[in-house]
Amino acid sequence: MAVIAMTPLMACNAGGTSNNETAEQAAPGKPNLAFLEKEGLDVSKLEIIGDTYDTEVPMNEANEIIELEGDKLFKVLPLAQNMTEDAIVGGGFDIRAAKALPGGCTVLILGSWSGDAPDSSRELMAIYNGKGQLTDLMRLGDIDEFLVTDQNDEFTQGQAEATRTVIKFVPDGFTIDKTIEMGDWKCNTEEARPSQVTNVQWTVQTLETYGIDDKGHITFKGRKQLKREGNVKQDFQEVELDNLSRLPMSDPTRIDQLNNLATKWQKELGDEAYEDEVAFGVQMVLGEYFESNPQALLQWIYNHRASEDMIVPALQNNFANEYSSKSALGKALEQMSDKIAQRFLKELFD
Picture 1 (tube, rainbow, N blue to C red):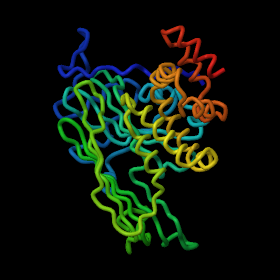
Picture 2: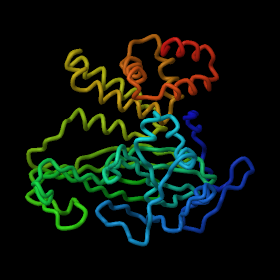
Picture 3: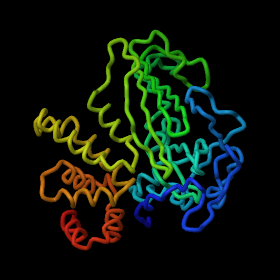
């Protein structure tokens, strides 16, 4: 599979033009989907988001999800070219919904999954400028998860952990209101839904706030817990890693945050427990950072070459075990303009 590096983050001009080139225009309040149509994608039945995207609300039968394959996937989601071939061949990607933003930018809600289970996908939010260039992307996680932990032979009732997510858009950003409940469930429809959970044993509800600037970049503003009831059974380390994995690719602090957290856990747990309990999770988050913005990660490693960190050994393990794409690494290294840094990093990952 041919692999190229992530397209550099482009500015979303509030006036709709850039470098004397006129951006594609959409009707007021309508997302600009011309860049998808140019790839031969039928957007006529794509769900258009208003102020709210609620995972508990069933999809309108008049809407259709757009599947992304081959070159169309790489054009819409350039970071996919930095994934391993197994991740591309063994999974799938699609477009779930779109929304217009002030200044001519467009939001797409994308889905991705591994194996043969598209109904247990993880969603992403991507922002594009008026010319259809990706300006930022963040992983939303599984915002509509229904995880069955116990069931009868007929798979009609048991216990489940259900997630409902409501994304609300405002002129300069959005909020993510996520509720996770564990309880009994009894399936009375063709599809299991969070609303089917009864006799709730525990609940966690969080609200995250994000800003979007006029260049189409997402900024994490804060997170607060709205509700925590019952004997909550969540792995706090897994939760913290999930929070870091969902930071937008333009966030300049996310690598430092991951390194600091991994360093803290290694000191608290010791080498053996760290490797057994959290090392793999750290590697997976780091792999996502590499896929979305390899140049930023490689530059961070070079800038911190004089100090010990948890990033280099984790990333080396990723390439050694083929969790991350070696061909993508080679392409990213070749694209580095700093030849001294390039030579250092080639030797480091040889």
